[in-house]
Structure formats: C-alpha cells, structure tokens
Amino acid sequence: MKLIDVINKATSEGKAIGHFNISNLEAFNAIVKTAKKLNVPVIIGVSEGERDFVGVSNAVALVASARKTGGADGRSAEIFLNADHTYSYERSVEAIDAGFDSVIIDCASKSKEESIEVTKRVVEYAKDKGVLVEGELGYIGQSSKVLDALPEGVSIDPDSLTQPSEAHDFTEKTAVDLLAPAVGNVHGLIRGGNPALNIERIKEIKEATGVPLVLHGASGITDEELHLAVLAGISVVHYNTELRVAYRGAIIKSLAENKDEVAPYKYLKAGEDAIAEVVEKKLRIMNGL
Image (cartoon, rainbow, N blue to C red; front, side, top):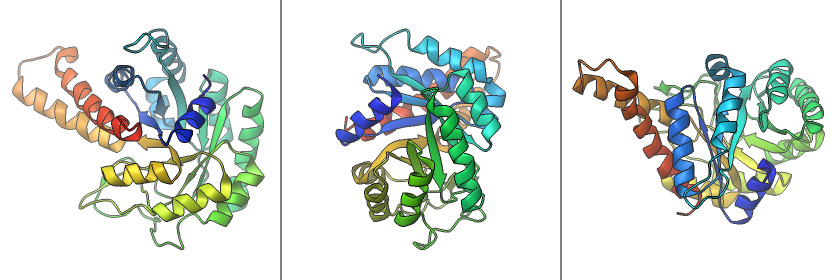
C-alpha cells in the first residue's frame, strides 16, 4: 500500500501512524523491530540535520532493506520514509528525487505569502513523482531539546494557534496532502511539563480542511492527550526528543555499569532497547493495542 492509503486506512479506523526520527542505526533498528513486532505501519523521519549526518541515500537504502522482511505473521513490512522539517525547495527536491515517500516543507517561520508560494512549488514538483507533501502552518519552535520554557517565538494562546479558516485557505491554495498545525504542541520537552493540546482546535481544523493532520512535537504530551488527539483527527504523530532522552540516559547508565567495555555494539544496545520501549508504548496507544 502507498503511504496515503495507509494513513487514510488508519484514520478511518480511529488510529494514527507513528512517526519517529532517527540519526543512527540503533534508533532505526529499534523503531523497525518494534513496528514489525506489533504488525503496525510506521514512518521513519529524518530532518535536514539528521539527513546530513545519516546520508540521504543511506536512509533510503535502510528503509528499502527493512521492507524486504515482514512482521511476525509474515506480512510485508509497511515502513515509510519522510524528509522531516525541510526548509527549502532545493532540499525538498533532493529528498523527492532520492526516493522518499513524503517530505515536509516547513515555512512556518516565513510570511504567509512566501509559505504558500514555496509550498506550492514543492507540491507541483512532487505530484508527478508520487511523493506526499506536508505543509506546516503555525510556529511551534524548531529544536528537539529539553527546555526550561516555551521556545522563543512560540505562543499557546488560542488566538496564536492555527486558525481553522487559515488552515482551509492554506490547504486550498497549496494542495498539500497533509497539514501540520499549531494546536498547543511545541518542539522539545519542557521541564515541568509541556502545555496541554487544544483538542477542540484539532477537531475544527480537521473539519475545515478535510486533509490528514499531523501532530509535531508530541514528546511530552500525556498518554490521554495522545489518545484524544487521534480521536479528534490527528493521523500522524511525531516523536523525537523523548527518543533522544531515553537513548542518552540508557547509554550513560550502560557506560557507568560497564566501565571497561569498548565494543560499541555492546554498550549501545541499551540505547536501542530504551528507544524500542518508548516506541512500543506510543504505537500501542495510537493503534489501540
């Protein structure tokens, strides 16, 4: 099945597709193994910085290899690859030509006019290639870090969130396949707790646009909020910071407990297992398992 078909199927069943970012092989293995274990589709995400580190063609090859083996019951593995947070037309084209299944053109920090113009160009280029394009509307920050407060320039005031009328206008003018709105979500983990999602706004935007909605910055939201967001109309949910925090903590502990170990595949295994634990928990909630 194509990615859009998988997304639509999940949405019709009241489920969502988990999107998890990687920047190394441990994260990739953890995500793929868990998705196969649960027999659910998953999206591997690589941002511009992560693509520069992993390698664009390497990311494509990893996913292609993962698709060759099925899940626990022998079904073909539904593993997809997304070019997360891409900030220019040129980098979008690079990912599209490399064989990614989807690309996010993130112009949320630009003016409305420029955002629509650049997004339209990416959509037009991707259309003939069969690649999905996601647009972003509403600024929620750009870093995947542990923060003391809201990212600079981010507001969770209802008037500052993505408005249903703006979302309708944006999707109509750009013809994006998916939309990532600002609904109280922020990038990164905030010490003391992330703000609550505006579940009603998700419903309003879904009704106004009719396109699959994507929740970025899901790290830090509660299990109950994740469940309610999916029921309200979120079709894809992004995680990155929680994976990084779990990975780093597990590696630190592993090295502390095995001071003389020098084989990376041995002490890094703890990081892979920690990521897998987080991924499994999120996928179970998104898929009602």
